[in-house]
Length: 132
Image 1 (cartoon, rainbow, N blue to C red):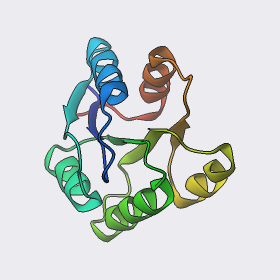
Image 2: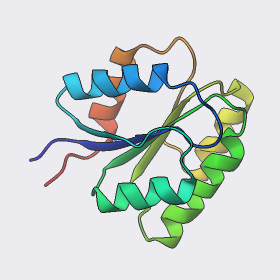
Image 3: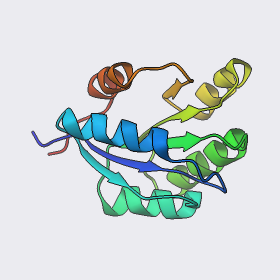
Image 4: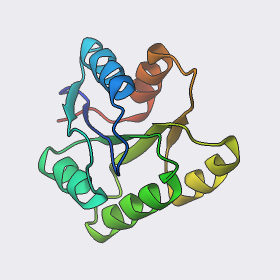
């Protein structure tokens, strides 16, 4: 079995990427293959990258407040591309009240401020399939 492959992205206009870089390093240190797409990515770009990279998961970091719209569009695109097997998770400033709706959309995991990199690594290990 190969390593878990993850695409991490910062969609929208949010310009703060320290947190996602810390998560990327933790996942890499745990033996996973991580592609960080950088700032200001559109859901279309993120889905395309995940498909091209044969990723098992997409992780979004959203601090802008646009999480409901961005996750909804990403999930819609995965469905259109017949790529719903890609596990979607995210973190950032996401109100607890929005988490049930994100779960209904198909988002597998949400990490709010205070989540540790160990919690994220453990969740990814137990949730995301490894490559072939």
